[in-house]
Length: 113
Length: 115
Image (cartoon, rainbow over all chains, first blue to last red; front, side, top):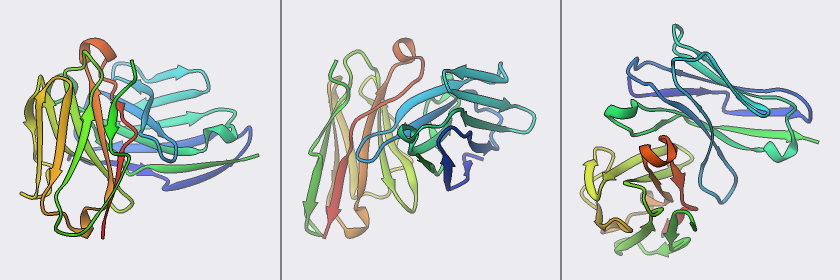
């Protein structure tokens, strides 16, 4: 129940295309769902986050779509750029009651020029 | 702010030796987390502190691992004795619900190699 399942493991997209990464969770107590971006040799960095009271959140080219009934959420990267090539992690936490993040297994994204 | 500072960046040690990893969180952040990253297991939470007090250490692999936070600006993760299977990148992260709205700030990590 504590797991967050992420797919795909790796993704190759052409420049200008849309990158889509999916995550699913079981624990209905989760109420905070962030995405992190990690470049080689660096720590993960917060990219965008959503709470279950909204179904979508957009920040620039990055959008989180959230489906509470299906217990799924996804990251969409519009107009993907080579600079977006990185590993992306979804995560979930129970917010106020726990505040510890459970991370998905990661997706390695490569955007070809 | 310089962000979360971890030291050393790289550590190579022999099996059986003691290893100490260090972390300086962002000033004002009252939560501190230690994660371990490997290809096989991804990002695993080892332990986290709130106001310098350990809250959840259920992710600590075994008694060879210990963590302390003697004050708000410093934490250590110690492995004694170290084993080759401890080789991984260890990350420290800090956060504060009132400051960063639950977002974590990670350090650059310590890459540990045990030979």
